[in-house]
Image (cartoon, rainbow, N blue to C red):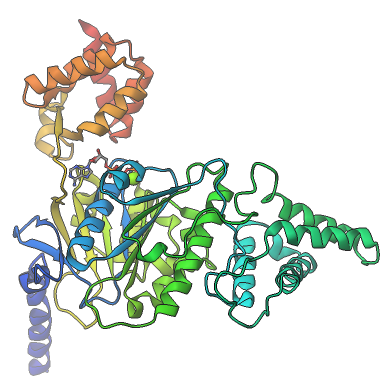
Amino acid sequence: MTLLRLQHIMTSEISKRPFLSRPPEPPAEVLVNDPLQSLFIGITKIFHVPFSWTFANLTNPHISVVGITGAGKSYFVKTLLLRASYIWNTNAVIIDWAGEYKAWVKQTGGVVISFSKGDYLNIMDLSGMKPLDRVKQIMNSFEILTDIATYPEQRRLTEEAIEQSYVNAGFILSEKAPEGKEAPTLKSVISLLEEKLQEGTYEYPAELENTIYRLRQFAREGEDYFARKSTLDIGRLAESGLVDMDLSGLPDERFRALGALFILQTLKEKMRSEGFSEIKGLKAIVVLDEAWKVASDEKSDAITIVREGRKYQFALIVASQNPTDINEAIFSNVGTSFILRIKFEKFLNYLQGSLNFSDFIRTEISKFGVGQAAVQMAFQTAIRFPETFMLERIHGEEPLYVYTVDFSDILTQSELSAGLIQKDYQFEKEELKNKFIDFDISSEGIEELFSKMDGQGRYIKVIDFVRELKAREVQTSVIVSFLKSLSLDDSIITRLVQRAGAD
Ligand SMILES: Nc1ncnc2c1ncn2[C@@H]1O[C@H](COP(=O)(O)OP(=O)(O)OP(=O)(O)O)[C@@H](O)[C@H]1O
Ligand SMILES: [Mg+2]
């Protein structure tokens, strides 16, 4: 009996020990890698180790990046793409929903492909594929973007008409077409269906009409971006250095998603047909930034790229403000997650549930400043160190100007000593400037505000800050909602607004 009990105590003691002595960061040999075969990202927060990223020991090269607006997601993506191109000569394709990478890509000497009036991408183009495979892909996109899956007869009619269009244009469905042979377009598919309707022999004319109606949405005059002969060449997309596919000129989200899905399908095909190679590093990186429809749907090729990308040295980077917009199959399978500032409890819950980091890290994430990040990597072999660690900040090429708004003057002694309330908040210059613009402050007013803060070492007391805003006719309700966005208690906000108004 005694022996057993002793043993019990001993095992439980021992099992505690590795926990107590467990270092809060992975060991340096994991974080520090050959500078010629890895990408420097930043210095770790606790032991100040220079962390450079490589996927050599990870389950795959894919990356997810999450964080609130202004947290530094796009900045991180840009930094990573540049370094991958220096180190590995990696090509990159950015599927640019809002056109936010355009200026930067131009600046760095990359290629911008924009949709504007007169640019077309024929979604029936084959770029080396068999027509049958392309038909499947097109149907797949329609299933993601329209209600076609719920109407089997209309689905069948659509698929048959697409196949028939290829046949009419002289293609053999199950064979790769010779290079240069011109593909039919969605317009020819619609014409086929219209002829069928006119013949009047088809049993369910209403089904036929609805089928035509659905396809016409993508082929209307002026909105036929994907229904005409291509003017944009995307065949060499994955081998042209840095390419920005700017989708911001398309009329709405559905068009953007159709374009994004088509590009992903083409890239996936490219990846498979190029096969394996012996090179180190990555051949290509595909970036999906805020493309939630494309990142969230089961049937999207984003998921195929995540499943198969490693062996082809193709990486996917998915960035989003909302982690729940990223499909579980992507989110839980990426080799590396970068978590920048996240404020919403429900997102923190989701992240903590799926990545399993400590409450300490959770609290830190909610307080991160611009560019600060927690990193989690999934290693191929079992490990005995914490998988999540923090970076002081992502170390990019551009300087960071941080402004501090100090709250300590308006906090009570007990609030201060309880240590539960943040004493100051940091804002990056651009971020703060964008807020001022949102507040409708004139550009001279913004200049004045910055020179005032610059004169105090990029620092301002919150009471002065609120007074400056009021002096520039920012409404109290606007100031209050700004303060709320910092997750401040109502009692503190009331106190602050009263005091700022007092004299
Ligand atoms: N690590 C960093 N070092 C220096 N500056 C940074 C860093 N991260 C972000 N910034 C700056 O902060 C601002 C916001 O960053 P960024 O545009 O990357 O945010 P985001 O997370 O992509 O926001 P959104 O969701 O609105 O697109 C930019 O001006 C950027 O230059
Ligand atoms: Mg961004």
